[in-house]
Image (cartoon, rainbow, N blue to C red; front, side):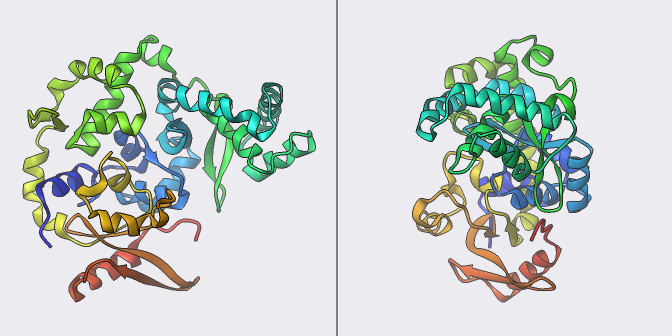
Length: 359
């Protein structure tokens, strides 16, 4: 199945035609962040773009090079640890304000949130802890974390830069205290002298070089930063990018289009992607990779839960699942369009090599 110039370029930019990063942490740093509601999925996304495989992802988590936080949109993202604090300070304000406005709906108040913070700081000072264990401690302290209250309290602490998700414990990431797990983690003051526009420019450059061709509106949608700030930041980096010069221009890293033309065959190869992968969720308009009908099947009921995708020629041709029991797993594909027997064989090989975590 032939690729379009746009899908081919984005596949190459996203390092999906071949792993191009020396480590998962390097891949995530280059992207700025990878959407991570589906934890096994985002770990696979990082592994697929780098050499070393899933074990390297676990190593990067254990060695404090990768964490997950809530830097923007009220959504959890996998991030390079060095970027956690400054990106969160840059982007998390609106989601923190929205969460505070909803707090009363959960029967929470600011005093309870402050108590939750003090307890977390005390118990996590001794090291990482599973989320369920932290919730039990909050429960014993009378904070009643059930019914979404625990999630809200922990989200607020993460989006406020106090805690994060750190090392893999075999089934999930433990919660860590940022000042203990990542001492001296640089914020906006340390990285950018407290100036927002240079920080926006740095984040924008990473997005466009890893996701491009993409527009400023794509980045604004992805981060929820204002177009005003983004447009002020663009002149700081525009000479390091190529553009199509359109009325609403797209930007990409230099040399990308030549690389994409040289990788036409690799870009046409069948791929298995996790749910919530940046290739699908990294743009305001996803229809470059699928039809509107197929999008409805990818997100049944428009419920925000993205199924794993089968790509052929950079387009979504179906979804896939891991069927069977441990030790006897098999690939199960729901085809949106007919997939050739040759492509099925390639997909079976992709399945055998896929970096599964926690399943």
